[in-house]
Length: 124
Image (tube, rainbow, N blue to C red; front, side, top):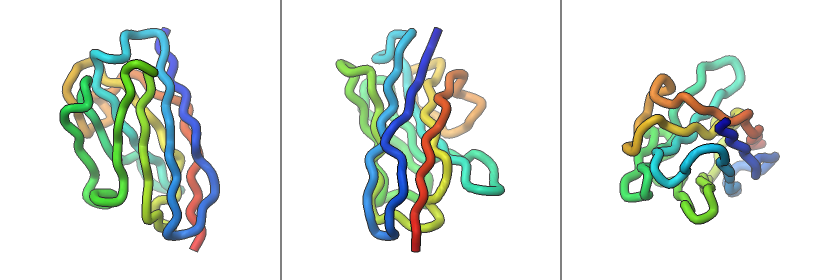
């Protein structure tokens, strides 16, 4: 059974930074792409970033490009999301997700496995 557990969320002032982690178990982590999505208050769950199975390729939503960095450590079965220059509009529940394939993807439907989410709140 696949388990994804996010951590690292919290309250931060605008302009600050947070690093989210997602620890995976129950599946061979190093052969599947991973992604981060977020659910802002009153909105739909949107794509944030994705990374291929070996970290060779990454992709970002336009709203976070240049501020967020996705990375992974296959030896630790963990994917990270470094978030810098945070803005109030980044406030959301952040979810990590595991794909059924090796290449990165940006749509929710391509990720069958999801974590429970971690709250990120950015104050102005």
